[in-house]
Structures are given as C-alpha cells and as structure tokens.
Image (tube, rainbow, N blue to C red; front, side):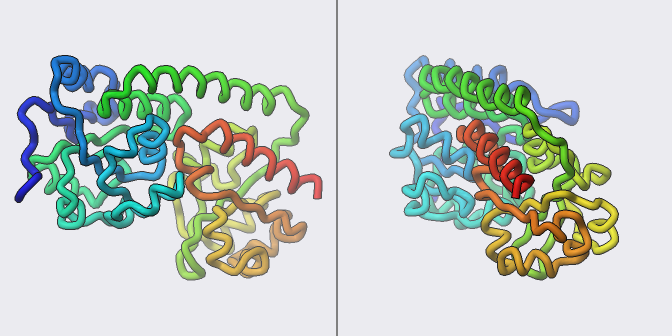
Amino acid sequence: MRGLKTPATLPRLDRRSLLQYGGAISCLTLLQPLTEALAAGARLPSRVVSIGGALTEMVYALGAAPQLAGVDTTSLFPQAATKLPSVGYARALSVEGILSLAPDLILATEDAGPPDVIRKLQSAKVNVAILPANHQFEGMLTRFQAVGKLLGKEALANKQIQQLKADWAAARTQITTGTRSKKKVLFVLSHGPSQIMVGGKETSADAMLDYVGMDNAMGNVSGYKPMTTEAVIAAQPDIVLFTSQGLSAIGGVNGALKLPGIAQTPAGKSQRIVSQEAMLMLGFGPRMPQALQALDQVLQQSLKA
C-alpha cells in the first residue's frame, strides 16, 4: 500500500518490545535506538496517528501538531484535535481506518485495542509505539518523555516535564497541608442508562481519588465492575462522582438518583453528585496538575453544600 513502507532508518517500537516480565520496561531505554537514529539524521515521522486523548495533548504541547495525520475519538483537547481525521474509539480500532491515513508512526498506550488490530498494524510494517498505561503522575511523565523522543522534541519535553513537576508539587502541597475530611467517593462510569460501571482499585479514577485524599468506595474490587444495588448500598458513599459526559448521558442529577442504590446512600440523600470532564480527570495527560486541583475543588465544595 502506498505510503505505508517503514523507513529502514526508523527503528520499530512494538508491544513486545515495550513489555517484559509482565510489566513495563523503561521507555527511556527502549527509545535509545530511535534517539540515536534521529541524531544521525533519520527522517522524523511526518504522519503520526495518535490514539488516546492524553497522547494527543502531549503532541500539541510539544508543538508537533503539524505531524498529526489523525487521532482517535477521545482526543478532544485542544479543540483543534477534533478537526483532524478520526480513526474511531481507542479500544475499538480498525486496521483499515488507521492504514488509510498512511501513518509512519502510531502512538498508543496499552489500553488501545483490540489486541488483534494492534498485531495486524505491526504486521503491516508500520512503526507502532505502545507506551505503558501506568495510571500515576510519574507514568505520565515517562510517556511525555517518550513522545518527545519519538517526535524529535526531547529538549522541549524535558523542559515541560520540569514545569509539570513543579505544578504537581504545588497542587499536592495544597491538598496535603489543607484541612480536609477523608470521605468515601463512588466513581460511576456511564455511557448511558444501560451501560453503568463502578470504578474499583487499579483504575485511573482510583488513582485520582487517592491523590486528592479520598477513599474509593469500591476499593474492595479491582477494575470496572457492573453497578449493582447491593454493592452501592453496602459501599455507602458520601459523594458520587461521574464524568461530565456520563452524567449528561443519564439525565443529570435526577437520572443519577434513579440508578441502582444511589438514592439509599448518604451521597444520594444529600444529592452530593458531582462530575468532571472525562479526559481532564482520567486522561493522565499534561493537564494533570490542573485536573487534580479541579477534582479536589469540586469534591470539597460538595461537602460544604
């Protein structure tokens, strides 16, 4: 297929290369061959497909938007990203849709899929960089540095990382030194009335709740689980947290109170039902310090109401 041949000078980074012994290897080590190739004058990728809103934000933050050929549907910030050709939802990709954009580099995290699509893209001789998901602030910095290396923006990435560390430290200090009550928060992921999940441990929502000093009301389960009346009532959350998109999809606060068990909880009785924009709160991109401050603010305000 025209435009899909991988330049011989550009090393390939695939899922197998980035994962070993069941965990993520340092991207810094794995990107060394590519860094050396770039230093030797290898052609920078000029048609990048970014799969994942946080990765797309990083591309824009590094001033590499002209290199973007397409993005996925979670790439909502900045707004300019929504004008680019779309390859669909990050977890439901198609080989044809991506290859039709003739990419010379595909950026994605481990969350992208289905796995069979990723394997077929690698077999198509396209450079596929699968970066560890790692829902922690440090994991975001590692991804940012990796994206900077891949796009030939390493110096700028390192500079921005130092600013991110300072902003994050300031946000965390404000939370850890303030007077706050540690309450139980239930995170609900909803795409509509028929698709309701609650977030347990080892999720991005769990990590963010921990960062703002709150207890995850579903911390006794792992991952996202279907919402049940019994589990919600047993959890007795003080606050119910949605994404803004999810809360809108179920009809706002009134719709939330109709979900299984919510009305029978302290949160439901006090109508402590709040929301945050999905990619800001859960994307783990370069807006993480702002996301932390915004989440802390909305949770604290709900407790004062």
